[in-house]
Amino acid sequence: MTTAFTPFDLAGTKLANRVAMAPMTRSRAHGSNGVPTPVMATYYAQRASAGLIITEGVQPSAVGQGYPDTPGLHTAEQVAGWRLVTDAVHEQDGVIFAQLMHTGRIGHPSLLPDGLIPLAPSAVAARGQVYTHQGPKDFVTPKELTEAEIVATIADFVTAARNAVEAGFDGVEIHGANGYLIHQFLSDNANQRTDGWGGSGEGRIRFGVEVATAVAEAIGAERVGFRIAPGNPFNDVTETNPAELYTALLSRLAPLGLAYVHMVEGPDRDLTRHLRQVWSGTFILNPFTHPDATGPADLALVDEGLTDLIAFGAMFVANPDLPRRLAAGGPYNAPDRATFYGGDERGYTDYPTLD
Image 1 (cartoon, rainbow, N blue to C red):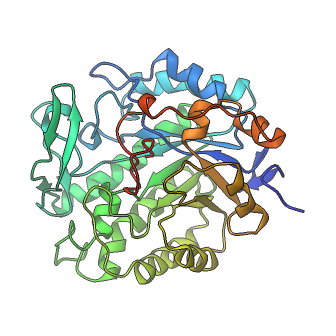
Image 2: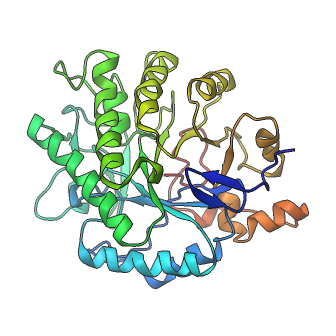
């Protein structure tokens, strides 16, 4: 019988179990250079018993940063800093993917260098605020990406993916969820373009598909995952027909042979079942567990075949050796909401920040 503790072959990479550590913003790359710090190496190494670690969101370019003290993968210094992290994880026999997260219109000029302003599919500001070192600030109206800037942004993802491999990562996860840049292109309120990058559903999925295609060609599809959050309203995005949109997206991604799709589930379990059927490859689920964090009872989703791997967030912060505790039936440390930066980016509760 397959359980969450059965080893798994992830496109040729051997995983010790099917318990994944979800990406969670920690804001520990202190300073203006976005370089990972020694405490980050310790943090990830402590959690290396996860079958798969997916890091906090990592900006692929300077303008892709949306929060203070988040790490990048676009300079040599950042690559060297991440090498300390991946070495520490590999010394504990762990597997670690870097999540590439361009936040698009989510951010603020005060977080960016050289007078840059956030970029987005359209010049439409998101409702809400972002935390900065000067306190909360309203989202600004972003600059609409030109065709040339879209091509350059895709190239930034490719460069960051190559840098991730150089830094020792086992792969990358492209962040297409939670109201960030790729999700903004998918959205019908953040993306008001009428050219080939918007309008129809085919136009709105184009950017995500081209990023995934380019990254897979650069580092190998077996090293690339893609994260989605169908119907997630976080960061002020709307999708008129998520089932139709994400069926089209996954159908276009399928021929690439990606390592996995990682879904942040909303309250519609039927949509999850549908997309699980649409996607024939490896499926990772961050289940909808409002108002609680994903917990031991959710391991049954692997047993039932709804997902191949299950992603835990808050429980991993509170319990670095979570797979051992899950296998033993506890005991568990209760997650402390005060230890998390921000709210749950699924938009359904104020629990931990999930990238």
